[in-house]
Image (cartoon, rainbow, N blue to C red; front, side, top):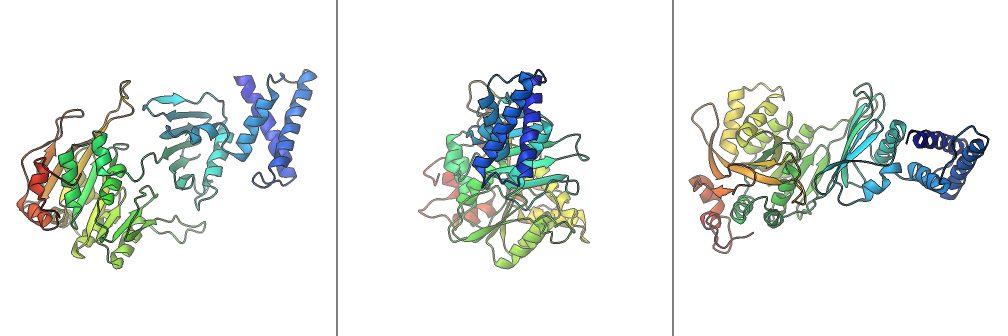
Length: 427
């Protein structure tokens, strides 16, 4: 394998030198690029016959590999084209990926760190993001918005380090999540019902638990008359909106100017009369702007990293305090305590199972947040399960104030209580 990789690197460098010398563009001069690659392979074989190199067993295969490297995504071309690959990991010269069953596998085709770096640059080329010494870390939507790329290079990392996450679930609905056993029909119906009003909902969980997928399903349940403004650092959600739009942050230019942060976006859309503001992955000062949205009468939906629904509440408060405004933790806690309606917490299996089609992701609990007389949050569990795989069951709790607000908006004679009791419902 080492000999093959050394030969590949040498021939590839020679081909690139030839292509750059002639100033050929792979997109527009494919035939001429192929000719230069063939000449580089022929030159290598000539040296091999003279005893300077080890001859290639299949020169045509080498030509194809180098062409894919120069005109496509090299050894990752077939991997990127596979619909069952959810995530791809690059660490220096090594490439691994999660397949459809959730198993981590290594790429058998040899690659080099230099080639992987060039693949990242090719992925980033259509975007406004850069990966260089001035910008050694980057996040961007790539592959025409079908994946999210997070990458770092030295000196931030020891070597090229990147993760590309494919958006394998788009336009998912609550009914689809019920079919996947992520939550029962009654819980899905309850979540649908609270999306009919300007509710304030937080979704929590660890990375990869399905927070963005659930957020998309909830957005799909939004009434068509609602104006929805969705703000994300890297666009992931792709629900068709009848009334509203999507917004994505902009990194600073080379001179440091022109940056548009997530907080800037939330402040901006507040002036656009939204019924609901959606914020993907709340981590900082944008949480403070969500607390301001309450005063504007807006509903909101956000995701946050946390180990439980209760921890998600404190994570939102801590993020809001990062805004540096002259407010205390007690004030921010009181605002969220009085405004948040529901927190939905998700969990996932860490170990893939042979008898399943993928890693299990489930809703673990749904909590109602009720106004508190103390400095801390007061919550009431509406749905709860003891652990992954156990039933998610209604606890019998339904806060009266939330029930009254939701029931006024439900059509066809439905009520929140009949939906929770498993009768005829919307999902």
